[in-house]
Length: 284
Ligand code: NDP
Image (cartoon, rainbow, N blue to C red; front, side, top):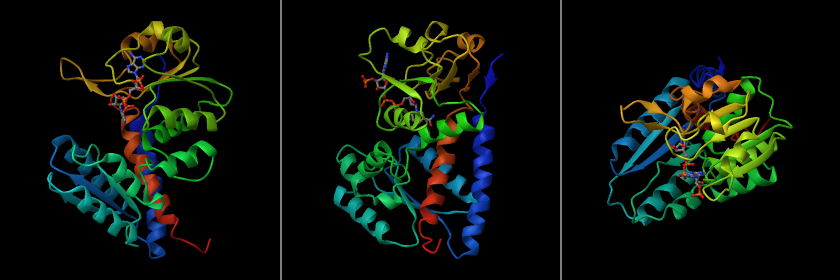
């Protein structure tokens, strides 16, 4: 059996470390605070927002929920972001995506101060990542690096294949693996010979949003497989982009779904918030 990379356990460890860091910050008079803006009442978004608030409470951070009506204008939303940017008691700001169609998502992301951009979606954060400067990193790929490191999986020098090139997963994942000295290939829907490319991977990151797409024919014997996908199958069971049962017998390590990458995203969001609050300390 392969080593099962336990995202639940690793994310719990990270949250416990953050809890201690928050206690230290509080002793110095700083209570990290995340403002979460939700527009409308999409039930899935409500669940995500509630989970983020629960995680804040667990590590001792404050959270401020800003719930806006579906009909809010773009201008009103931008004004709220502006006031949160200027509010020194707020360290991180995130807007739960997607926003309704009448609001320009890009304008919203651009409006968040890069110092408070704990989702890592602002162009300045993305640019900083690509030129090796400090900035917030998108939480899911940052969480995957933590999964690998804390499972003692070497990245340096390894063939890393990332399948998917979205702005929030695939592209930052590739940049992070490169930063860790991996040899990185990025695949997408136009990639020819996808199987062949995937079979070169020592570390394969599957992030295409297609349930159980990757079977054993896509993996090299002994590879490490990271499954970012999250879906409900026809029996309402959670599954990933990887067919776990078919792949598990061929790999050295693999993330399960659920309990792999998923829990890491919130843990890294909390990590970014704490870092944002630490940025307020100027005497160190
Ligand atoms: P997107 O839909 O934004 O991007 C999918 C990417 O996969 C695109 O680059 C697309 O290529 C590529 N792709 C689609 N089909 C194929 C194919 N047959 N062969 C090769 N490449 C293909 O998805 P996201 O990056 O946002 O998310 C990916 C998955 O990860 C989803 O299942 C999502 O639910 C999950 N997810 C999980 C998170 C977590 O916390 N666990 C967080 C974020 C996402 P092209 O660019 O050419 O169209």
